[in-house]
Amino acid sequence: MQIINPATEEIITELPEDSQESIQEKLASLRKGQKEWAKKPVEERLEVIIQFGELVKANKEELAFVLTSETGKPIAQSRNEVNGSLNRIEHLKTNALKWLATETVATGDVTESIAYEPLGVIANISAWNFPYNVGYNVFLYAIVAGNAVLYKPSEFATLTGMNFKELLHQAGVPENVFDVAIGTGQVGQYLLDADLDGYFFTGSYKTGVHIAKSVAHKLVPVQLELGGKDPLYVMDDIADIKQAAINAAEGAFYNNGQSCCAVERIYVQDKIYDEFVKHFVEEVKSYPMGDPTEDATFTGPLTRAQQVEVILEQLNDSIQKGAKILLGGDQPEGPGYYLNPTVVVDTNHEMELMKEESFGPVIGIQKVNTDAEALELMQDTPYGLTAAIYSTDEARAKALLDEMNVGTVYWNCCDRVSPNTPWSGRKNSGLGSTLSSQGIRAFTQPKSYQMRG
Ligand code: NDP
Image (cartoon, rainbow, N blue to C red; front, top):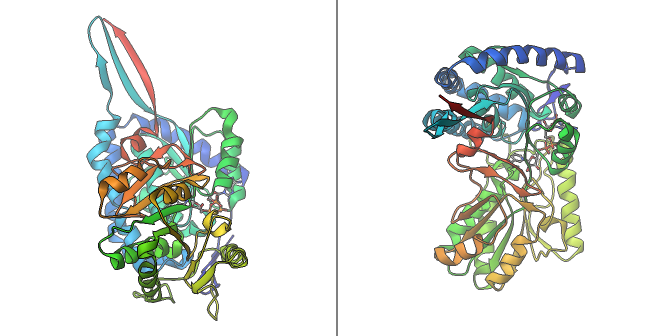
């Protein structure tokens, strides 16, 4: 398998892919390791993950550089991710013991309690866009809960996956408790065919449905963290229109729009529409684009060449249906999977741009008159990951957010994930939750003890 640098299109390295046989060998070893690992106290398992965090800190620069080289993520954003994702470890430090402890729920003639046992050996099939964040949400929590993990990084974040393995083992996670499956979607398929005790997936709706169907007969837990078409609505009572535009632009264009909870469509009330659009375009114009290894770069290449085509087709469709491109819409000269940050106005819901996930540096902005109209448009999607509203009036914003059928709602913020609250998608955005107390328990199965004595 070739690992390509998306900024230069050069081959970084070539790696042998796993085969069905090598996956079976890894699984047999993990099966043995998990039994021993589960016997260790939670404190000991947690301590190893804390050590892993220390190693990540010590190697931050090198890890960030590897992430940038294989995904094209600008280096400042890679550093942010390597650093920021450590908050998962802080969350585990504060909460794991509490949520993994056995609970006594009734005493008397019969003592009744609930023990939270690990699932066993789980598959973590992961995405490339935020491999630290979405990887940690699964494998760190699973390891602390006493599971063994077979981690399948996306082929576009393989070197980062190999770094996880090296540092986890250095920190004291036994080699037969965490292993990595190297390869493309075909290797992911081997995991679906194999005998695992849970499937934890981050990726597209299409692959998520395929996974759920493929493993349904095993009757093991399946969690799916999938895509979104997340709306942001700016109400006309907003005090600082410019600041709202700056925040919305960052929500749309951070990591080149390749975030599951990126702002993917914006609705603005007519009274402030022109001013909002003016500030928004100014802000996006100011983003330095170029070599992702440069500290100042905000916009690098897309990670995957094929996504450039997907976005250009969406743009073509919207222009044919009457939209206007205010900025971008084309590719710069030279190598790399670059696309100029693109702002589209005069959009409507006949356009793919407002309905299908773009997962790139493009945004459609639509004018609305009333809150009711905004709500209807925000809900007009098969996805249900997040929704954001900017307004000075909390009650007015919350009335709409309460109606939204999504996993996370934001007032005066967007595109953010906290380990303290569940991360979950509704409708085509997924199934199950990571993070929070729910994300700790997600890697366990309850056992009921009813003890008379
Ligand atoms: P894909 O669904 O294409 O890939 C995700 C993972 O599944 C990769 O490891 C991929 O391997 C693997 N895979 C592909 N085919 C199969 C198969 N047949 N069987 C098993 N595994 C398979 O997702 P993308 O790479 O397109 O990731 C982007 C998507 O992820 C977006 O929709 C984004 O919104 C979503 N996402 C959701 C998040 C959330 O928390 N809700 C967070 C981050 C991203 P390979 O890459 O090697 O082909």
